Length: 571
Image (cartoon, rainbow, N blue to C red; front, side, top):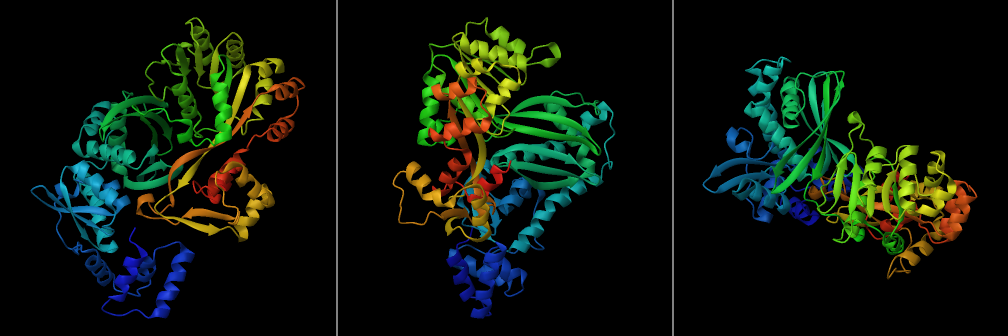
């Protein structure tokens, strides 16, 4: 993101000076609309776009280039994939020897320039251009796709031979490769390919939020679907039944696995691909975002030779990642660790991992029974879904095994009645469960555009509905080292948006947690069939932080924002 000083200095050097009152009003509008100053000035026709960017180029000592009307060779334009070019506002327009000429609206975006240097193998020579010139150049990607396919048949016949032929055409292969590569670069967790009546929509889930990255012509649909089916070893001629597959490719010197789900919808077949980093190492508890007190409770539970560690939360809340991190701590040469999962998301060296297959009767329950005959010390069950799996897991924990598993509940205390509702006797739950972790994932504030602010107005009223504002200082003092009591408890942080976070104000995710340990007092309450609210009150009296409190502490530490905590706490 161009610095405010650079923009101000460039405005002062404009050929036609800008009235100070107009500039002041533009600054107000930029803040109100959450836009950059240059956007407000250009869209309001208050300054000449070319003049501004030429002056910015002079200040940054970067040459200015006009792209409108300039011929760009297709092979040079395609050195940078279309989705990447659009997201990071950069195009390659010329190449000579080892030098690749790049046009950007923000030549200070060193991260993108370095990535393109590694990806293309060329040495970038950066030029500055206007946003409208860049937009014009980006349209050429879509124009080329349409030209490429309007010269062919407007659609691909659905016979297997025709589909296979379409999937092997170079443009289709390049488009699929670009979609996959760009998703990895953007740290997307999922790719959605969604057929609509007149086009094909590509969306990425980035930091938990779905974002449209490109719209493709409808006549690419069959070829694109066939290409992904071939990669995933799925049936090309099956269009009416859901299919699941998997494939691996090498991207950016990293082995990536893609878990593929194909679902018939009204306008074709929707494809969702989950990205899995094959060589990813388990994160530490600190990297996951555990605060000192909850982390100590979990570490104490991990050290116990038997019992259960349960992780709860909705789909996509990071439960599996937490379990793999605990496995990483437990994975020592002297123990036998076995898992039964659906699916196996990460390959862990030294752990015996089994994939369930309901079609042949290999369920969580049957797999767990088989594992118990394999002399395990530690067992991980992907999910407790039914009474049978719950009972076998509990019995395994009672007979000297450490059992790790997940459940779908909203918080830690409601896990207990969930298990008893499955038919597990309360005394078995009370004496086998060591600790219950409930969690959600929140987006982290981008560290490049983080700003401090004081919470007030509607946001303060919203927070007051779920938390006693008077207790904020007490909460922060008890859980944040070197907490500055002279500062207002209502001073937090937010991301204003920059190129590094695609103007979202967020980059990456971290967990907020609720760690409930089962001590003697809690065991007594479970045996008495106490309701979840009583369990929660007891746990809080004995030091448990709720997810909301954990999140507020991380807001104060500048890790996430109040808006994120409020958004996630409503799930």
